[in-house]
Image (cartoon, rainbow, N blue to C red):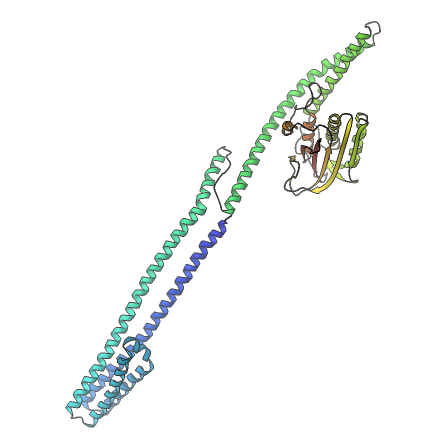
Length: 488
């Protein structure tokens, strides 16, 4: 997957490379202009020497003073030295032959001026000196004009290149802005629009076609938040329904408890009256009392579900708790059911002991009822660190990945759970037992107790047959472990 950071770095590097390239070109052109300027100063110095040469030539012709001849000779020698010292600069302006001819003219000019000094009245010689001096000055002026033109051309070229460079940089910056806008701004705008929809109550998942890793991760995180928000909303709705249901059940249970007690008491009194009924009547009265007691048990279950009780956390030894729970159920265990325990000694959790024992009682009793007279009941406990996911069982509750936990599993070899019932196994009043053999609150209460402890629970069918219930409890300090909520 492509990275948004990589794209931004790529654009930055491209612009940096462009800036470096343009800077190098500018440095080269500035260096060229500097060389042109230096060459121009040399040509200007040569031209100034030729002008001074002509000036002292005229003074010598007019006044015939030796000092003028000396100055003339000095500047003629200076012009020759300049030609010889900076030959490359002069050759670049005129041909090598032209530079050599100019040097010969200066040398010949010096000899002619010396000859004229010996024969000041020789007009032919004077005319030849003037003509040669004029030609030298004209050559110097031409060199200076060419050098100035070359410098102007170099400056004009530099200006053009600078304009082209600035235009190229502006164009590339515009393209970079367009690319970044397409790579960054567009998906962010789409995400903003989707988030605005969420802000208005539309919990719509983001399904953007994004290839950038950072934006894809942000989209996944946002979708995860939406899923969690939707789950929390469902949980709140369910909690509200259950709270209302608990209030209703509490009232109904209290209303049923009194007539059930009266019916049971009346049946017992009639059954104890020897003058009242025959044997068959006594059997019917016994059945009435038995069914009344069973109805009272159901009412007590409803009251236990609807009643709020204080949560008291303390260190609970799981091996001791499981052993005590099995002793309570000893009379319910058929002789054909084999028990297998894998519970390390000394392993404790911070829990409300009566509530946790109630959850174990419900699970083990359900397993014994499911197996009938023969089977194998297995209870395993181990300490581990919760991972990011569970390999076999999807646990429902408030478990957090990475925490130190205790996993407790109750497995049986019974018929298992119908596949269509697995998602609803912990719903209140849902049961797979025949009518009249279960109220559907047992596993729901187990789920509520485990969730109250900050744990989670899951159910699954085993490949070899039977069912397995997995409980995960956090290992915490009893002083700091508090119930998430209290629904019982």
